[in-house]
Structure formats: C-alpha cells, structure tokens
Image 1 (cartoon, each protein chain N blue to C red):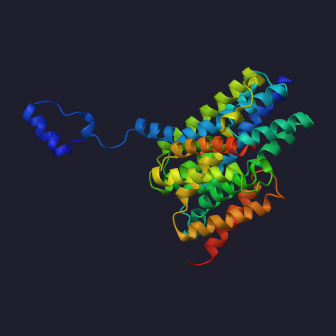
Image 2: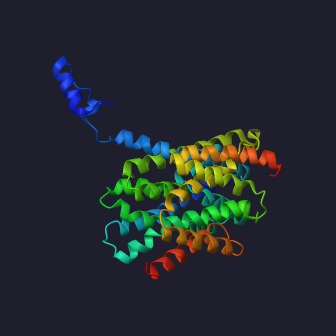
Image 3: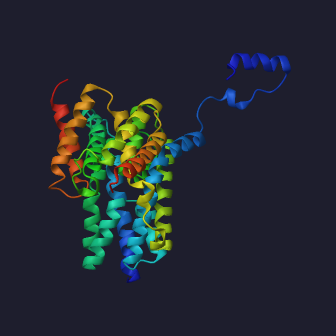
Length: 110
Length: 250
C-alpha cells in the first residue's frame, strides 16, 4: 500500500479516537453535574456490561446460539460462581476459559 | 502481621530500626500501578489474539509490520481499526475510512462521560493518558473498581498499560509471524472477554434496581442486535435502560 495512505490512516485514526475519548472527560470532569445526571450515569456501567454479556453469550460471532448446548452460555455459570466467591477477575477469566474448553470438547461443538 | 505498636515495642527492646513496610501503610504509586496491571491481565489475555488478527489483516492489506504495529500502538481501538482498514482498502479514500472509524467509536463518548466524574482534579496529561487507553474493556474494569471506591488514577493507568501492551504486542506478533500462528481459538481465548464481562456484571449487579437495569439493557441489546451493526445495540440499550431507571422513581 502507498505509504502516505497507510500512515495517513494510522495518524488520522489516532487523532480521531483520542478526540472522541478525551472530550467528554476533559469537559465534564470540571463541571459539577446535577444529581439527575449522576443518577443516570450510575446506571450506565451495569447496563453496558449486561448488554455486552447478553450479545457475546447468546449471539457469539453475530449469530443466535439459543440451543442449550451453547458453550458460551454454559461456561458463564462457573465463571460467575468463581467470581462470586473469589472476587478475582483473573481467576474467573481463567475458570471461564478452562470450562469453555472442556465444554466445547465434551459437547463437540465449535 | 505484627501490629504497629507491638513492632515499636519490639524495636525499642532490641534497638533495631523499624521495617519501613510497617510504618508506611499508604499505597505507593508503584503498588497502585501494579494493582491495576493485575486487574488488567484478563484484558491482556483477550487482546493478544485479537491484536494478532489485526496484525495479520493489516499486513494482508499491504501494511508493513511497522505500520501495522504503530497503528495498534497509537490508535488502540479494536473494531475501529478493523473498520478503518477495511474502509480504506475498499474505497482507497482516507476521509471515508476516518469517518467509519469515528462512527464505530462514538460509543466512547458515553464511556468517557461516565468516567468523567471519577477523574475530577486529575492533571490534564493524566486525563489524556487515561482517555487514550479507554476501551470497552478498560472502561468496564475501571468503572467497576471506581464504584467500589478502590480505583485510583494510577491503578487505572496500570489497567490501561497492560491492555495497551497486549494489543500492541499481539499486533506485532500477528504482523510478523502471520498465518504461521495458526488459529488461536483452539486455546479457548474466544471466551476470555465474555468471561471477564460476566465477572464484571456479577460485580455490578449489586441491588434490585441494578439487576432490573441490566435485564432491561440485555433484552434491548439482543432485540436490537438483529437490526444494528457492531456495538450500537450495546450503546442504545445502555442509554435506554439508564433513562428508564432514572425516570422511574425508586
């Protein structure tokens, strides 16, 4: 590829992404936000995580996987249990990967 | 662990100097960075293979190893980089590629705004560093940690640094080794990010209203994911659920 175009994409994407990520932090961290905005923002994290989990587990790779032998869905259970009792993200992730590998092998699915 | 007073008494008796670890209980910058780095390890695991896939895609599109690696090191945007690269190779038009990556990453406006109240009084250069390393995954880890009152700008930088290393290193390996790597999915890494988000969700679902918000967002995102591309269902569902929960009194 033409080097000007390739470097243009690299620099252009770097600037675009940094501006999008920085502007709200830079602008809003100086303001005293009204309580209703704080309340609204307090529901964003759990909503984002639930939405991400639902789509990643029930639509892995962008396709519905609603059958009961869905390894993504089944491996979520030991992951959640390990996190609930250890509060360790790394431990839960490791437990999740191991159970996912075991389930995929046992169920014989991709 | 010896209580401080007991240690003091011992040191008077034996005339030995006190070990500094006992007299300075406040966490140091280094210990906070390391704590963040540990929190970020699941992200590292998830980013390496996806970064390698980007390195492979970029070199296949005609990027050099240096260009592909610099792209990940300077941009740090998973889907945004793939879309930008695809748009550039399809159209040859730089402006179109930049618009594409910008649209895909508009969701960071929401994440950045949600982080803002936790970054009050943080020096501007550190805000820039934290904004630069803001991704879906670092946002989720840091906001969960912040709401437990444990996150600090240095622990957040530790999370960001480990994520950045995983993404950049993965890209460099993918761009260099290419298809010789084989399919990383045989190691189960497909489930690294879902597993981390499951754990984060369990940590966030603290009360009845949080559970209701999560259920609303999950159902909305699934319904929208059949008609909207990429992460848009997640963003729209989160905005909708937060708005409903704010409007309905406790």
